[in-house]
Length: 192
Image (cartoon, rainbow, N blue to C red; front, side, top):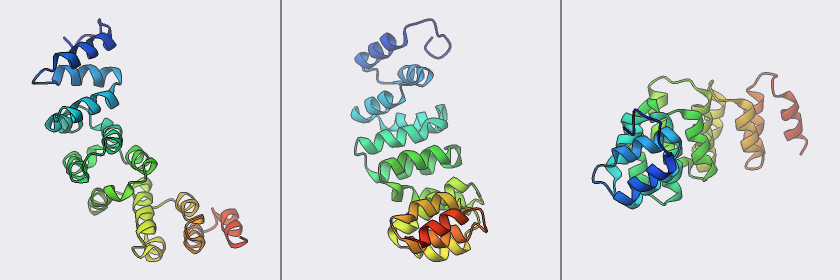
């Protein structure tokens, strides 16, 4: 009924299912997914040690909600090992742009490094993927200049802006690589 029907009050049903503390929370998962209660679902599953069902949700039910789930898990101080394991199980089904944005908001980009590098190894050329790796390499000082000079897939404007306050020389390197499309930013960063 929860998965196939929408003729019920979602908040009331969600609250009822949470209070029932069912051993198998799949009805709650379906209600929360269908009506956008993903943060609340993640918190409920995490606080009740139903980690297996968090994985079931992001791997089998709705991988596109993985960024939101990861963000909530970070807010709940979930172990990095569980987050990394979850990401490895979701693999490429998780959308990159919102995942990087959710984790970057919380200053925890490094958690994504193994997952991002695995996507690169698969041949993914998504600029958001390469922007995320560039930001991690810049923050960890993992030979960022070589990465900025040799990687052809990151967005020069986004990475250059990220570097401006951290290291203006790296911002210059990123803007220079844009071959003219970031000339205004290049001039601005050299005049500081």
